Length: 524
Image (cartoon, rainbow, N blue to C red):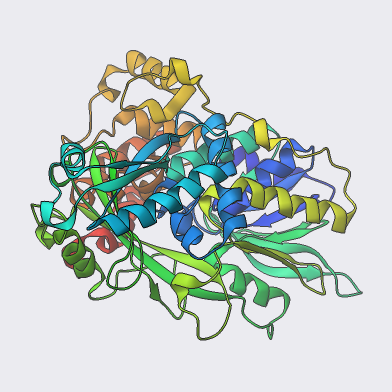
């Protein structure tokens, strides 16, 4: 992926694009990838960086959704379990099996969850994940020694998937590019263009790096802007009814010592009625999530007062070593684009299934859904677009298509950098050519100079935040450590992008502002 090459393609194109996608999160990138693999000409514009919003702030699970089973949404669970299996098959370097333990306080709970999870297993029949089973108190404490014995009389273990959300997103974007899609970050759509009959025939957009404005014709415009999709819809119809009820979820990240297990813990019902996960991830512990309705979506949401403390208090009920706010290494907040239901409904119960709507002027909006079902969402959306715009397209092929970085599961390296997949060899070759790039930039992080250079050269990283938050997960894992190495990251990037000291200074100021949202004490 190369931004300059993409802009050159955009500026030299003489004919309308088949599909123009607004939004570079999981849904938008999924649509671009699906459309490109069908032979369609697709352009994607993202106002910030790929995955800047919701798609980088998930609970890091590829899952069917146990709580949706309790709600009776069998179709969503069945589809998600199927997609979970496809994702693991197509990106085994990023998606792996993770066992989850539900602690039970009595035999009735073990029976209740055990039966429900057997249905979960049944719906997942034939896939490549483990099966559920009951465990005694002794077995429970052997698997999670830091679990308070008072909260469990045994439990039930089931299996779901875990992944690195934005590493998967970048691999999807690279796959889309390799199949001919044109992707541009830091390019914001600011208006829709329409023909004499009032039908949308393109957009105008601004390049945030140069302030240049583009007028871009397209046969169909797809709004995949996630929490911001109502804002994009307003460009088409300023008086249209809003589709979304936004909610935010907060996660905290602790050192691995608080939960040194190779199994995740699920609290099936917290005091606010949500499911809470305690999960090992990248040698840290991720705990979340909350569910708080909010009025408007922002690109950099901040935890509300009490959300961090709620997670700490709930965690303290289950772990022998209760964490404090001083122990939190990072906090990240994501916004869920939930499709409105009954106005009295809580956001925790609104639909996670996706919705596709086509306006009178032809704007296709897709919203809702979740990371696990992104491939299916994209397939459904492109099917609708092909029919609506009468496009000549091949059938969808993404069900069995290996994503960029794919490595045969039997040949996956044991390296903690295995998330690079097939790219790891090229990064290691870069380190051999320039040994100074091999050293970690911080003792508490795995990021190296080679990772920074690779992100700029091959993954369209444009800012220090891009590298520290999404091409690597440093900011999500340890915000103070990320701030300490920001200057060195900026110097590496400036050398690659041919930028001056003023650019470095601007980048450090911008990153300092963003990082404040990830600092627990600052956020609280």
